[in-house]
Structures are given as C-alpha cells and as structure tokens.
Length: 233
Image (cartoon, rainbow, N blue to C red; front, side, top):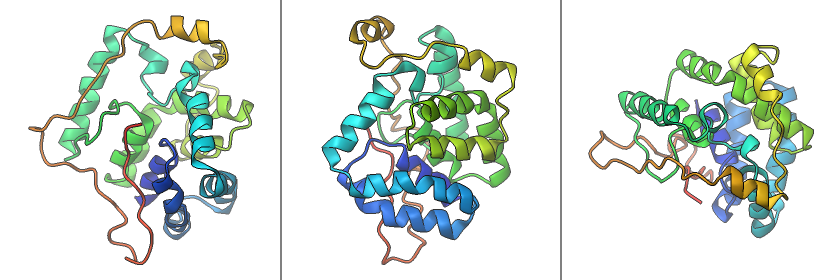
C-alpha cells in the first residue's frame, strides 16, 4: 500500500527532496483511496506547508516538535519502554519481523521509528498492516492527541493511522499514556535530564537478507516525482 510509504515520507525530517515529492505524495493518497475525502482534506495543510515552506524553517519546526519532546518521539518503544532493557528485546523482535518480511534497514534510524515501520507496512498485505498498527494503537492515540493539542498539522497523519488501526482512546493503555505529563521542548535542563542515558543503537546488518527499502512509486507513471525513502537526519 503506497499510502503508508507516503505517510512515512511525510513524517521524516523535511528536506528539499521531500518538498519536491509532495505532488507525488498527494497523488498517491488520492489515487489509492485508502482514506476518504475528510481525512485527505485534513492532510492538505501539512502537504501545502511542506511544499511551500523554507527548508530550514521546516526542519527547525520538525526538530522542536519531535526531537526535543520525548512524549512526541516517533520512536514508538520510547513511550512504553524508555531506555530500559525491555526496549532492546522489543527492538530485536521487531527487526526479526522486518527480516522475515524481506525488509532490512538501509539507514541508521531505530527499528521502532514510526516512518521505518510505515515503510515496512507499505510492503505488507492490508490485514497484516492493520494488525501491526493496532499493536501500537495506544501509542498512536497518544501521539495524535498530543499533536492535536499543539495544533500541529502533523496530527492529521496520526489521526488517520488511529482510524485505520481502529485504536480506542478509551483503552487502559492509551489512557495511561495520555495521563503522562507532556515535555516542554523549551525546558532544556529537563530535556537533558530525560535523555541522560544513552539510547539503544541499531545499525544496518549487511548480512541480513536483501534490502527492502525501495521506491514504491516505481510502478507509477514515470513522469511523477519520486517519494524519497526514509533517511537519517
């Protein structure tokens, strides 16, 4: 499903390549029809901003939102495991899921990085993609709600994923996450304390299967721009 490839691109660090790919992303979202007119209309402010914003301004906004707020981290296991040993085990399990599907990491992002997961889901059957998103449903609900509170145009992507996964905001897991205090990205001392421990790092394994990170738009009209793959910041 190319829609998940498009969502993956929208949630990556904004670059000139992403800005140039916005017309292709918009075309994928409309042509595949995974989401209806209301959800597509909600995504339009983000698409328009990414297509028209100065790259530096877009990058500063992205870093402030996702990299300086742990409660908005796109690394999903951050929300349930933090830097505990449990996170390492969950990472290994997720890597095995990727490799079993013929997908290997091509960059330096962690396996639980939401754009990486979405890129993997773009290669999977719809029922499998929905089930994997449902497993992360509580985290998606929390991210969608926190982004909505900040009036971020990225919220539209998370809300669409919540709808697709049929995740319930009333679930015990979602309510527990939503009850957590939200980081203040301007409180640098608190952020330094939060990230004091070293993060788990996973690099690409050159011996693990064939890379599955590919441009899923290759089968589209070759005149269309290409959606860039997930790239490290």
